[in-house]
Image (tube, rainbow, N blue to C red; front, side):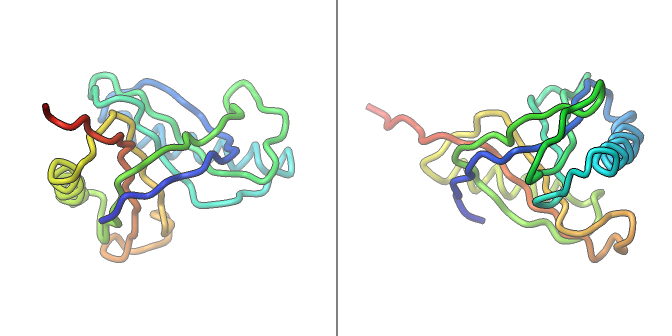
Length: 154
């Protein structure tokens, strides 16, 4: 686990509000749509696909999926041009299936609590391996929590 500074990156993405139960279908459908958009507009990915959770609310979840790009194209009704938020992030890498990721989240939250930083709400998952082709036990996912330096106690 470590604290890192992320620079802004151009992205294409699809954002929605959905329930936890609807999330797997949304992710599948959104990544398929982004793939079609990329092929139609000759957009080349410049990094790994990601999911941004814009708030900690679980019902409904405010979620955005996409990937960094060299050139964004013109956008579409579904696929929007944007920027991956820059800032200071606490990060860790999760190894294994999505079903066990909660433990990595918990460890990262403990790391932040024990540091001089405070979580600001935004979290990002970056898929280092392709869940569609990689056995669950071999999946690698980077988890990022946007943080800010805590105010010293008086």
